[in-house]
Image 1 (tube, rainbow, N blue to C red):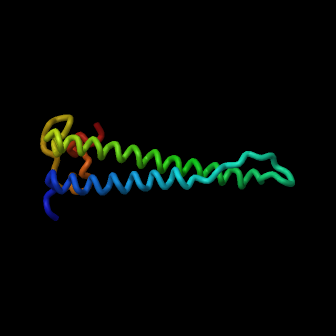
Image 2: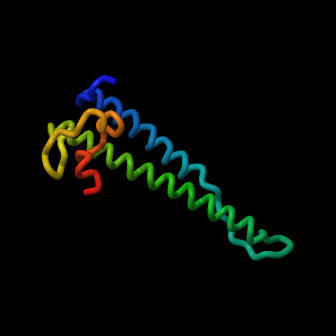
Image 3: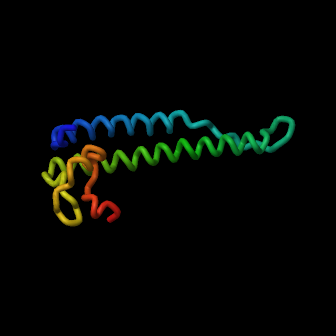
Amino acid sequence: MSSMDAEKARRVLTEERDRLREMGSWSREHQPEVSVQQEGALGQHPGDYGSEVEETMEREGLADESERQAAEIDAALQRIEDGTWGRCRVCGREIDDERLEARAQADTCREHADS
C-alpha cells in the first residue's frame, strides 16, 4: 500500500465528498410523500402509514449522515490547504499512514481517536 500524501488525500477526499453529496441529494429527492389520512374505506392502514414514516425517516437519516460526513471531508480538505493535514489536532504528532489510508479525513492519531 502506498503512503497517503496530501495530493492523494485531496483526490480521495474530493471523490468521496462528491459521492456523499450525490447520495444525500438522491435520498432527499426520492423521499416518499407520507400521506396523513384517516383509516377507513378511503384511508390508509396504520401499518402502511408506519412503513412510509419509517422509510422517510431512514432517507432523512441517510441524507443527514451524508451531509455530516461531507462536512468532515471539507474540514480535512481545509487542513490540506492549511498544511495541518496528517497531524493530530490533540497532540500535534503525525497520524500514521495506515490510519490515513483507511480514513483520510482523520484529524487525530490512534491514541486520541476518541477525543
